[in-house]
Amino acid sequence: MERFTTKEARSLAGDAVKKIEDGDEKGFFEILDKLTNSKSGFYILRVFGAGIGEAALSSPEKYFFLFTRIMHRPREESYNPQMHDSATRRIDKNICALVYGARTAIVGSAFTRMRKKHWERIVAEIERYNAEFSEWYVVDSWCHYPMGYIIAEHPKEMLRKLTEWSESSDFWFRKASAVYMHALFVGYPDRDIAPYIEILDRLILDENAKVLKGAAWALREMAKNYQPQLLDFLKKWSRVESVNKLIFKEALKKLDKDAKKEVLKWINH
Image (tube, rainbow, N blue to C red; front, side, top):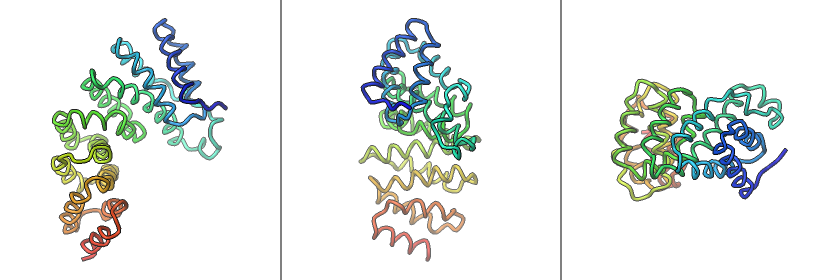
């Protein structure tokens, strides 16, 4: 089974774009399936997606339609069971994660390339896909490509969107609001994160386990660039007995040794 290089992925993207420009959608998907059914990793899929996104800059509507076609294709059309061991093939959710994870890697990378001119439309498209699929392998997969970039580049507008999602009746959007801000914490130091901490203040008592998992993920990643703010947050919430202790367990993982000891004192007090 093939494993494509970066150079080959770029070449495949060029061939795929030519198929679309010639009106040969079937040919495009044959190339796409050749790549997704290979042993190539997600980095190679993102290289391919970036090439598609580059072409999409000149004909955005055509390609936004194409991305929807990619996301909505029957799962079986882009899954080769020979790629994976028998244990994986027997678990349906694993198959979905492999198929839709690959699709969001490609589409998300294309969105990343397009975001400078079309970020508002991209956020709307991601919002639609999240509502349609309602699974972690789609919802979570946009976190760095492109949501991390968009949140960093449009902080005021995206803070409003994340706040809106954090108050949604749909728990997938409440989870997404935490998962996406984690990319900001990881990749962008020296930001004013107080407004994002206010969102986490709301989410930390959420009754849904998936939302709590997303909040814990965001807190864990704060340790990289925002450890003082993380410690203040944990100290405040360590006094609240109703907080799920798994939140603290996850948040401690990337703290330095001394800070971890200090937090454990607060929790066990």
